[in-house]
Image (cartoon, rainbow, N blue to C red):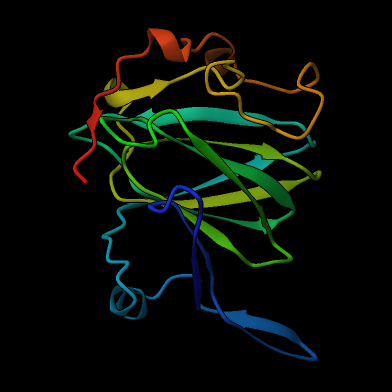
Amino acid sequence: MQIVPTRLPEVLEITPRRFGDDRGFFSESWNRDNWAAAGIDFEFTQDNHSLSAEPGVLRGLHFQAPPRAQDKLVRVVTGAVLDVAVDIRKGSPRYGQWVSVEISAEKGNQLLVPKGFLHGFLTLTPDTHFLYKCTDTYAPEAEGAVIWNDADIGIDWGIDTTNVTLSDKDRVAPRFADFDSPFVFEG
C-alpha cells in the first residue's frame, strides 16, 4: 500500500496494491490490521455508494458536525472524480485551504478525509460509482455544507463551472464567510 500525504497533510491519498493476471486484478481496499499497522486506525460504521450518470455532477461541500463527525475513506469503482477536501478546523494554520486529487477506478487510489474537513467531488466520466466508508452513521441533524464555488475558498474544479449538476441543497449552501465551523484544530 502506498500512502501519500497531500498538501493538507491530514488528508491522505492511499493506493492499495493490486495483484493482476489474465483474469483482471485483486486488491484489498481496506484491511483493518494492515492499515492500523501503517498508522491509519479507524472504526468504520457505514458504507455509502453513489452513482452519477453524467460527468459534471458535483456533490458537496459537506460535513457532519461533532459529536457525529465522520472520517471518510473514499474510492471510485467505475469512472473518475475530482475529490476535494477543505480544512475547516478553527485555529488550523491551513484553515480554508483546499486540496484536490483525481480518484479513479483505473488508478485504484483512495482519499482519506478526516473529521474537520469539508468534502466534495465532481464526476469526470459517465456512470461513476463512488464508494465511501464513514466512521459514524448519517445524522441529518448534524449535517452541514458550504457552497461549492465560494470565492473565498477558490477551488479550481478544472471545468466550466456554469455547467454542473447540483442538488437543491448544494445549490443554496451558505458561503464560507457566513459559516461558523464546529471544528477546532488540536495540532
